[in-house]
Length: 117
Image 1 (cartoon, helix red, strand yellow):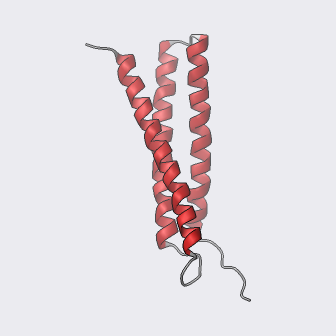
Image 2 (cartoon, helix red, strand yellow):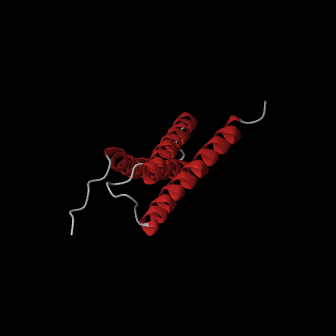
C-alpha cells in the first residue's frame, strides 16, 4: 500500500480562504443585522454593506479557485475517486452560490438605501 500523496498547495489555500471569507461575511452580516436593530448610523450601515459585497466577491473567487483545483489539480494519483471529486465540487459550488447570493443581497440593499433620484 502506497502512502497518500500531499494535496496541491492551491487546493489547500482555496479551501482555507473559502472558510475565512465565509466567516468574515457572516460576521459582517451579523453586525449589519445588529446595526438595524440598534439604529447604527446610515454611513456605518452602508460601509457594512460594501464590506459584505467585497467579502462575497472574494469568496466567489476563492471558490472558483477551489473548483479549478478539484478538477485540474489531482492530488498525486492518476485518477481521483469520482465520489471525492463530486463531493469537493459540490462543496465549492455551495460556497459559490452563497457568495453570489451575498453579492446580490448586498447590492440590492445598497440600491434600496440610495433611494430614488
